Length: 232
Image 1 (cartoon, rainbow, N blue to C red):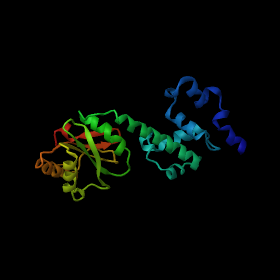
Image 2: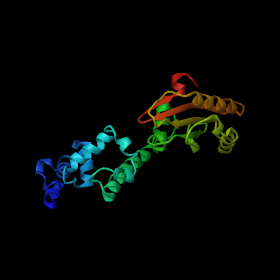
Image 3: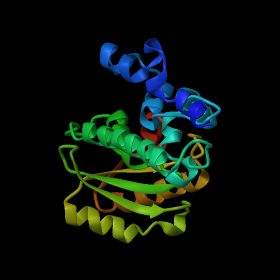
Image 4: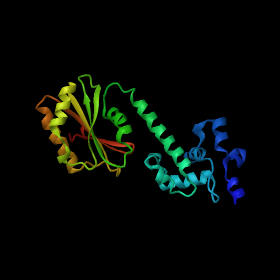
């Protein structure tokens, strides 16, 4: 049995099938997602190779790396052939990718479009399994002076503390705010509660000469902009 298991180890594969050697010789861009994950886990189970195991894991999340990144270590360990060490390696690698995207957003110096706002917000809420509502506070140069989480969990009008939002805007000297929340379900359709919150904050901000510039719904790698759709 140990002999059979050893045969599935990457080091025992034919040279043309070794993803590690392929990466060194040809670069990481030529490897498939399954081959990259196979490098992380090193070996499969006694019944399948590391690449086959990686393909099975990817298939369970619709071959979507963002969905894979949402799985906890315990969830990854439910796959036969994935122990704690392998699960930790996968989780750590995907977290590094998320942090890399976060670093890229630091290049954004000012919000000039809904896409800029999305790029800034995606690392914060794009891959969360639950809903969160955030506010970006902007100065008169459209630079983000502060990012604030307004609520976590389900979104209803009762969770919005308008006074706190306006107080923070005044303290920061913000002249504009961008509202944003995520839809883990993947739908981009705004709910009645989404529209009510937008209207509530818009009316409150107008009295203080502060503009609600946009409200973004973030879902996976997509987003909906209230401003772009003309429903702000």
